[in-house]
Amino acid sequence: MSARRGRLGLDAVSLLFGLGSFTLVGCGSSSRDERTTLRFWAMGREGEVVQELVPAFEAENPDIRVVVQQVPWTAAHEKMLTAHVGRSTPDAAQLGNTWVAEFAALRALESLEPWLATSTVVAPDRYFSGIWDTNVIDGAPYGVPWYVDTRVLFYRKDILARAGYETMPETWPEWREAMRAVKAVAGPGNFAILLPSNEWTQPVIFGLQAGSPLLSDNWTRGAFSEPEFRDAFHFYIELFREGLAPPYRNNEVANLYQEFGRGAFSMYITGPWNLGEFRRRLPPELQDSWATAPLPGPDAAHPGVSLAGGSSLVIFEHSKHKPEAWRLIEYLSRPEIQLRFLALTGDLPARAEAWSDSALTRDPHLLAFRRQLERVVATPKIPEWEMIAIELQNRAEAVVRGVTPADSALTSLDRYVDRALEKRRWLVERKRTTAEAAAP
Image (cartoon, rainbow, N blue to C red; front, side):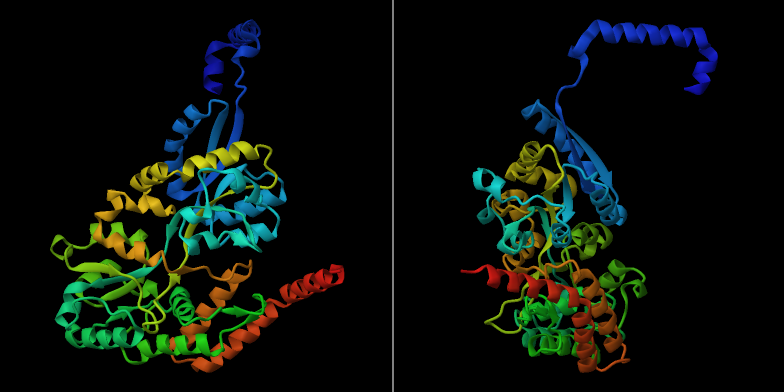
């Protein structure tokens, strides 16, 4: 622009400015965009794709203009917090469902209860119950699930068959026997399962499967040394002790897909983001040799649960356009829009009825996810959870590597958690005391 100004000269610029001013005056107010401008933030690939869905929404709602800002996942959490402190949040946004509790505690989010009460599009019974629950804080809904993920077992069905199993076992004892058989036929230096030692998800999943609440007393104290989690943790650690799982971090596996393909390990707990990767990265001759299965549970009476993951749609408390923001959320929540979103991103739909579409039913690898989504559990819905999970990860890895005894690690973890949640205990007790004092 500055170079062009040099060529035109000052008089020409002045003339153009004058003509522009005349044009604006001549058009009057009719040239102004009088639509409500709705600001929507979305992360990563979803932020790119949602812009393709906006034109149809605007066509249905000619009084609304949606401005989408794509935010990198690596910067999203800090950007959201900064925006809240500066009272510059968008009207609506995509929010990872493990973040909902934190932003609700900060009073950054609008409770969606009044909007749900009159909606004909969004209702809790149209979603997987465990996924919906991730958005409910102290009885109030603060988000609507947009897309979901959970973790299931990816496995080499050809190696499992060589070990004498046509299907994946459904209980821990049978599963461990199958892993022993797989280890025996896999060959020297190979393992049955990969459980990266620097991930907290696997010990947490096993704990939830055993019925552990992870945190006790209204999420104010650690419950990791209690019998449920302790027993599950010992099951997890014994997989390493028996040599069924290697004590590797995920960055110690040079190429996950290549190692899976050559049989270095035959089972891996992971999520839907790896479906496309397995299809792209495994050689054509192995495409019929892998499968997915819901996670086994402790016994027949306790089917294996998994984590309730994904992203939700929220409205920020400071929004001046909440009715318009809710209209956008309803639009993105329609089953047909969720299926289009699936086609564009590969993200699994949150609406249970969308799973009856042939795009999902004809894919055998997705059947395990459909079954698993009926059995998912939210992690504790408190802002401190991610910090606690990382501490669990560090202590679990020390046990895997033989640095710390298992029971000592869990006892010290509970002490750490109790200190970390001291303020929360005080707030919960204060709330209880106030409620008792106000009771008639």
